[in-house]
Image (tube, rainbow, N blue to C red; front, side, top):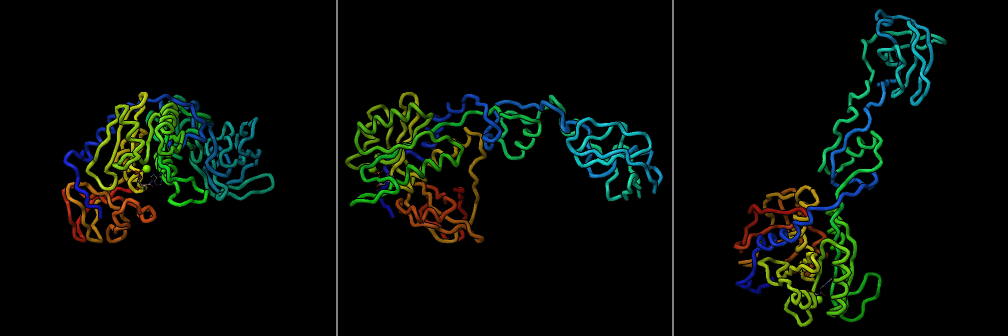
Length: 401
Ligand code: AMP
Ligand code: MG
């Protein structure tokens, strides 16, 4: 376990989170896009949407059966002449001659003059007649126009998070596009001379760049538009130009690596020179954190260890990004620990855990390089800063990953 003492000046997790929220809060105000219905899933409606037509659109049958006048089948059994057959979508509908029946399919228009539908199960068809075993009351199995929603009525309110059920209703009234808030645009910038893209052979001392892809995925999973994922070597000029492209394209930029106490901390060196704040947060993993504003764009700098990067995103960025996007908060649960835990005093610790039927199990040791172990976790276990030891059975708060 890392036993470095928390520095006296370390900010608390809540303080740092609050600072991140202040920086990102202005992203709540965004333009409105009209997106095709096929792209609307998971988006937040920017305006009230009213039904342009009645639903049902016209008076139609709720059953496969026979449209009649209820009075014609008041006494059963009774045999009536068959005056025609109406399929769904059939134009040029004739009126029902008095004292007769017309066969109708579900969703087909009800012929004028009919006031109910007798389901086919209650009838026997002859050549040119149909015999009714039981009657029906006026209105039975007739779907009147506007009984679901009337033209002009509110269908989905501004602010609604569009789910498949909303799309079903909006598509049913014939809307092709929806007004939604533009998504927050994010860019990811990774740093490190040792990092190689996936698919290339590794030389001595090299590792794969996982944080770029991982942060992109974490953002996309929270409905953020990832507009760029770039990598820079630990070279200030290269980092500066990548940063300029990122801030030009995005509402918010995330960097990974280059913020600790090493010799080549390119992120910290460049951004601290532009007014960024770099310091220690009393958290494990993810202690070194940076916050900057470059050309009006907030830049969140996470340490490069893969678990630190992911936990930093979960703890500092994900809650506010979800709030700004109108997504429900990250689910939290209070669960008993299956295993005892130890934690450094003075630092809030986020252990990787797995929910089991009898509580939360540890999925990983505390090392912030243990990214394969994190893949076996489905929660972060939140151990408060002042706690140094917890026995099995102690109740802890977990955050769903
Ligand atoms: P740094 O924060 O730059 O000192 O990096 C800390 C550790 O995380 C080092 O072992 C880096 O090799 C590793 N690391 C930094 N960035 C990445 C990345 N994008 N993908 C995978 N590992 C990284
Ligand atoms: Mg580095």
